[in-house]
Image 1 (tube, rainbow, N blue to C red):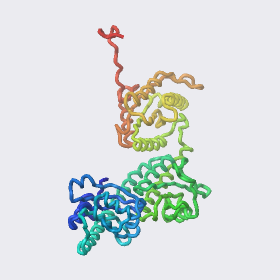
Image 2 (cartoon, helix red, strand yellow):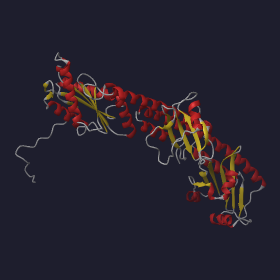
Image 3 (cartoon, rainbow, N blue to C red):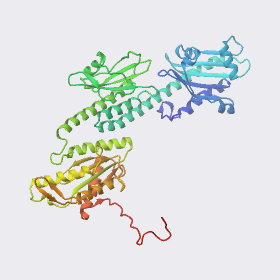
Image 4 (tube, rainbow, N blue to C red):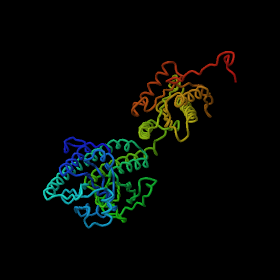
Length: 502
């Protein structure tokens, strides 16, 4: 069983130990052979055995059914127990159905009593008693004692259920808050929707909960936010209830056409929203208040992330690139850096950053702006020629400073370090020229390499580490990479060593 953290409602005891103590007390008080306790889930119409006790320790080890799960449709008696809250009592020798008589004989029982455990009108579980003594029937006094013990077991089970629900809610809330930073860091609509769907699947443990993120278009209509629908999802439809949820800024519930529970949560509360989160799940009930609150938190995160991604795309279309080099500019670099770090953290992939700068002060001398721009444009072409197309990202940060983002690339000498050295050699070994200005001269470049997560925990720290290493490379004399690549091993003079052969 999964370890569960409980509130003081159950005095800090482990759930398994607590429930086992309950069934053991019942078994000893009534001198029974065995007692087991099952909890009922109305979401999945299943019973799960949470505790088992047997008076024979060896038999207990062989027959322990803790963790077993059965569905209500497996037995008519189970439906009577849970749906009608009716006690089912069977004795060997009574006028039983052939199936009931065979079940008692097969188990070796002479007595079997199943008692629903209720809190008000809600059935929480079932307490099952069994005995093997020939002719055993409970006396009136034992029945009275059993009624008292069953009420106590129901009270304990209710405390456990409330504590477990509280613990699950806290875990889900903590997970959503942690995931919120990843959702907000993404600038891709599809990635945001994927993250929201992943978090929505945790709202209802054991139940398949589907999530659709729908946004309002410029013309007032609604459309799915993601370019690819979730597998098995139907065409999104913004019906009157969905539009009401978005326009009034309040959650709405209904049943879908195929009978599933449907929840529509706007991105914003108490005002018209730019979209909504729609959840559907195969529940025979409505979404509970705590589930609606968690869904509203998730919808708010989705709305803010989508708005940020939309603003980013708008800016990207206007001023994303540097007019001189055609590379991405400074502001885009930091936006992309944060997004790539978030993606690397989420998918546990390496990420390298190379900070590069042309050596010397030729670009700051009075040789004219056309000369400087021509050198920078030529250098940018060399950088792009050294990178992977549509994977790596090159940005211009200053007069002669550049940044290279290398996704899925570790920072070692066989990966990002090798790329940095290739850039250094290509720049240093090329005579730059311009169609109008002619030859521009030769330039060298210093580079600093840093990697996530080896060298930094976030984007700002990664940029700082790479910048420090670039400064060190320039201070040493330039035309180098920091950290430096290992020197290639030299072959010994005279060919292969003695004793070696081809």
